[in-house]
Image 1 (cartoon, helix red, strand yellow):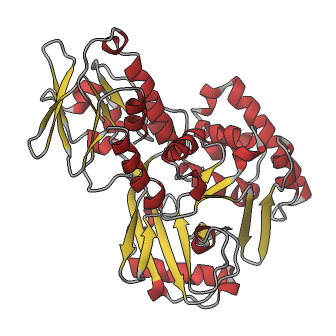
Image 2 (cartoon, rainbow, N blue to C red):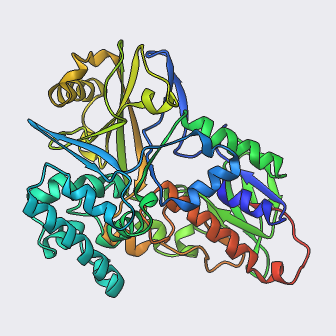
Image 3 (cartoon, rainbow, N blue to C red):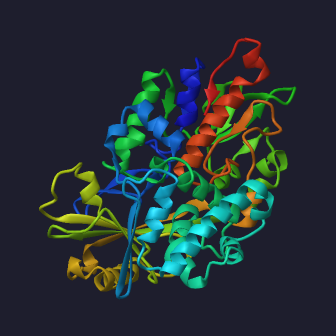
Length: 449
């Protein structure tokens, strides 16, 4: 959507092909008959440093639906609680304010974490290549962070941002998040939550804006073939149902596993585009547990859980009520990232585990009925943020003239997040503008996004 809208705003004729009947990709909502309400496919949280995403949502006219809660995270483990809260302290002192008030760490650990954050930024600026070859846990150990500090502070941030456990995750991606979130403006570290169902923020408004901008949106149109002319340049595309479209540029905004399923001039994508097609086939799941309770809940917007399968609990109805008091039944959304270990568990087992864990760490919620928990599995939530996969991520341009890439998995320097997807879209728009046919003013057909 970012790519197509950016191209249309730049004056191009754009056609967007979407396999599904709706837009939004892995950011969508659906109606759940069991709970009798709409649910998001998973709880998405953004940061104030998501400049590309926020600019896109502002372009859609829905920025007012976002809930800004600042830098405030309550963390709990069995018998203990701590809050990371910056208040209204300006940058860069907001990080110090948050760490010095975090009671899950001793004063020595708090000061050590502050020093580690500064040293991490220094390494990121001086030797980014070295960080690309380290895991997050390896980097933290080099910075003098104990396993205990990592588990109570750094791990929750890393897993949420990278969707891979720090023992396997690439340190360069983690450093990029820390730099953007905590070493810029204080506003950059703010947690931003959707104040409405995801379909009302992304897919619905996105499609409306695209159509208004003149984009031809073709739903239920799965790309099957990219055709090249006799010179090897992009000539058109064909869909699985046989429709053909001429164009002079194609932006593949597909996940790598979908790219592998198309043909390019009758050849396999890996033979045309390179080894990254195979190297990025591995994905990491996220499991969400939507919990419906029949009473009002006195909880903050989000609570982090340490030492449990459930990693985060979001008070969904609180930030989707747009400031109104929630006096009736409430919806909570629990999230487990890097959830491959749950593949062998059925939904009932995960629901029981969720109920037991939030019952133990969030006792003020009262008894939770596992039958009122809806499990949603995003099996291919992200590519793996490992060292190997990060090194394989391709750039926007390919070896085929007129064939470009966009998606959270493109090499943006960021983890595979909404912000990475939005940034890749802007990169694709810039690449199209640099094409010789565009610069020369030659007649153009439609770009197929």
